[in-house]
Length: 306
Ligand code: CP
Ligand code: NVA
Image 1 (tube, rainbow, N blue to C red):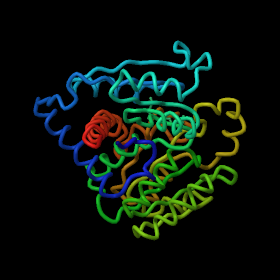
Image 2: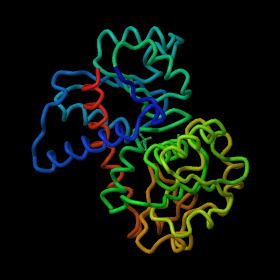
Image 3: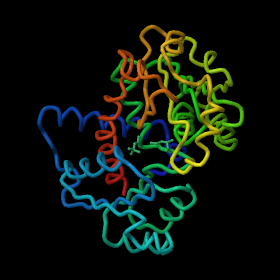
C-alpha cells in the first residue's frame, strides 16, 4: 500500500502515471463520461487549517468517482481536544477507504500514515503540498511547457517551494528559486533534492535576486508571503519581501510566451500584481480546475496500489 505524503517518496514513473491517469479521467469527464472508479468508497478529510480548493476538489472528486467524502476539522473532532494522531488513524482507518489530511507538521502526518491501514494523502503541511504540484504540472503540459522548460519560483521558501524542488528533481527540469535572505528553502530539502537532481539531470539553483531567476523562464510562479500559521509575522514579512512582487516588469524578463502559475489564494499587490494575475499569461484558474482532476488521479492511483 502506498501513501501520498511527499513527492520525495515517488519515482518519475509513478508521478507521470498519476498525471496520465488524471488527464485520462479529465478527458472522459469533458466528454460527459464519469466512470465510477471508486464506487461506494469513502474518503475521510481532516482539516487542521483552512481550505477552499483542496476541500472542494477532494470532496467533489470523490463524489464524481462514485464515492463519498466526509469533512472533519480539528475544531469539531476529538483531534482538537488532544486525541493522538495514531489513535485517530486507527479509528478512521477501520471505517474509511482513504484519508486526506491538511495539518501543520509533516511528522504528525507521517505518524498518522504509519498507523493507518488505508492510504493517506497529504492535503498540505508546513513542509510540502504535493497534491498541488500534480495540478501544476498538468497545467504546464496543457500550456505546452513540456520539454526543457525553465520554471522560476519567486518568493518564500515554503511548502510550495519544497514541492517544486521535488518535482523538478524527480522529473529532471530546470528550477530557479528566488527568495529574500532569511526566507530560503529548508536546508534538508535542498540537500536531498539536489542529490536527486544529479540523477535525473535536473538543474535547481537558488537566487536572492528574483530578476536573475525569471530571466528567460517558461513558467513563473509564486505563493503567498504569509502562509497559514505565520499571520503574526505579517508586518515583518511584507517589509522583507520588498522587490519580490511578480509584476509586469518581472514577467517581461521571462520568455514572451511564459505562463504564470499560482496555487491560490493570491494576495494582489503583495506576491503578485493585479495585472499579472488577471493578465493574458496567467493560467491560475486552469491550474485551480486541475486540482479536481489531479485529486482524482491520485485517489484512483492509490486505490490501484493497495
Ligand atoms: N491551493 C490550495 O491548496 O488552496 P486551498 O488552501 O484553498 O485548499
Ligand atoms: N503556502 C501556502 C499555501 C496555501 C495553499 C500556505 O501554506 O498557507
